[in-house]
Image (cartoon, rainbow, N blue to C red; front, side, top):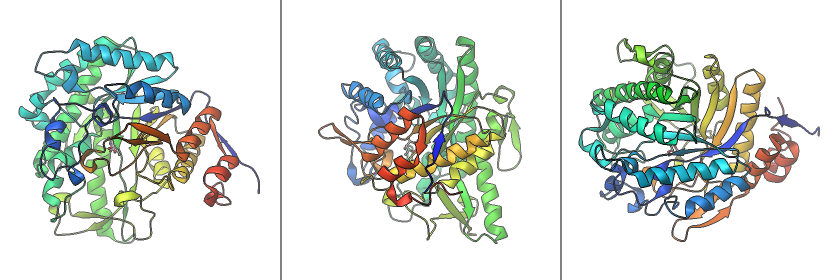
Length: 452
Ligand code: FCB
């Protein structure tokens, strides 16, 4: 069999993505901390606790792991609730701590990308209605300005908002759709109202616009984007017009909305759209989060989800906890789609829950092959951030879903490199993927992976 080598561009960024709340631990001023105390909110009543101890020594330990994985980039978050624990009171010690974290990364040749909002709000913001009203917009902009002013000598790559559409749906829609069983994706405040969901989405997109300009005022050379979770939706019945119609509706709100907001500056509404001048071209790069594919079937009893019900592919490969269908081609399809806008693209998250690490090596190889294909068709992909470095607190799923290249025992804080971590380290070091890696890490793919 011919030996194949897929080379990546010379300045390609290889990293992992993390979120502040999921890694730092001991975060009592966040609404998530309060939410965790509520009965039935987190699987098996688990708690984030110390998480990966990034507010303590765990950060330096994981920094060594980043270096060992040959990462030259890392996406991390800052917590609003630490920096501004009470309205208008900024905590200098927290800012110094983030300065230390970014400095330590830069010293090791790891370029930071900082997320300003990743799902969690300070309790005082939640008490004021969070993103339900535009009242939050000046408050968010003030927080963003404070952060950028304080960190701009250490970072120039910013994500304003992580996954606007997911944030709106899991906090404001899904709670009403559960049938008896605990839904794995219900986030605070756990409401269920389609109109409120749309209002939250609109406000958070406006929040991005304000943040985009505030950052550029303070740091003209900054590169700013959104980490957008794009859903790969295919019809359950490929020939059904109704299935395709509901996909078009869901796609408009879940996928196209964020692209339309930050590029032509139009926020789609259920009927029509709202033009916002400040949002137009508020995008220096497109951040793409991609996980899995879902099939959609028309269901007239499901108006809250625009008459489309999500189902898992009965013939698909499904990851731990029925999380989703492993569908590498989806990454290529989405890259081609967003590539049309001509903006640089970072894959800001991609990964799977896989406690035994028996799928992750093949997952990495198959997905990176698709990235390589897209790059070779001139899609300007500049970097790949795997979700995630070490196992961390997976929101409502607690510690049940393990996404790490490095295994973490949260009780002892012991870390153990997974085989997939070794593979990722080799890929980053050589800046390529080849047959020899497939042979050693995912022999089940030999003979098929590099065909076609
Ligand atoms: C993404 C989130 C991230 C993590 C992964 C598994 O949607 O941005 O925080 O939960 O899923």
